Length: 173
Image (cartoon, rainbow, N blue to C red; front, top):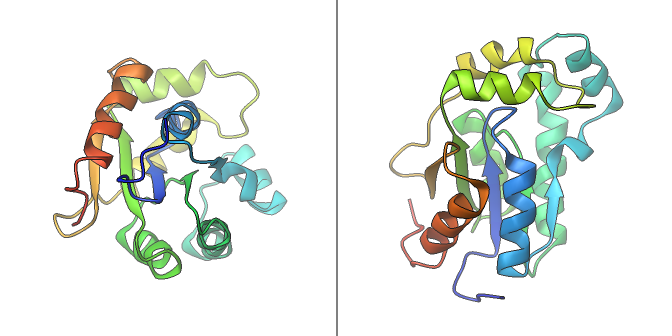
């Protein structure tokens, strides 16, 4: 179902293991929007660094965040992209590239997040980096266009809730 009342640029944000890829694909299908996993836009140097258990710095992330914004701009008709968007400054940069972007923050209990990371095969991000992501995560501020959704909900329930919020007309910060 394509819903033209929903925002056209959606950033599915959260720490690693929150389910951005799963939720992004389901939400994209529901809203008729393409989904891009932001991990696919990381440089090989960033991937290698994370795979070796080394947290990314702001300097490592800025080119990637530029690519996130570029992808949204290239999808003028809309799209959903998964991106940790851990800091307000990162989200502000994305909104400069895509001014109407809104943030669907998938988040949950630390134990659940860590368990998911430990049990997903073939991903470059080790669970040891969860602590560094949690340490720099800045929750959405009241003036930011976004909402938080609990990953304890099954994916389809979470997508139902996100779709309801996205189509409610109340997505402005």
